[in-house]
Image: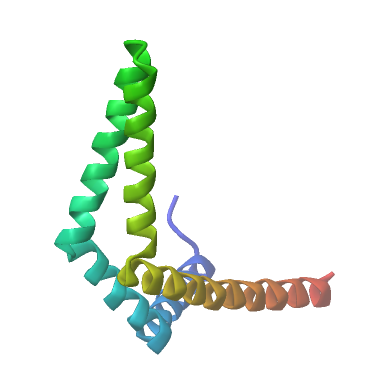
Length: 122
């Protein structure tokens, strides 16, 4: 089934909206900090260390080694805290919340307008 003219128009407008959102300064800042986080060797290393410590904890639990399990969990928690407190991660999460707020606002506006139009038609 071929898309209707209305569907095509909606899709075109959606693409325009996505482009506009992508150009927004707040979204640009979010993308930059996201890239920095993804390319940060220290953070990548921390993630790998956290995964390894968590894996160790599971293995120690499986082999009934509670002290080693406890130490591995403690290590994972320390590494997670270090990750969570890293300035790039803190900045990333702040930008993520701001970007999410913007997208939620846009979504709410669209929903309001659609409901408004539906009420006019009904």
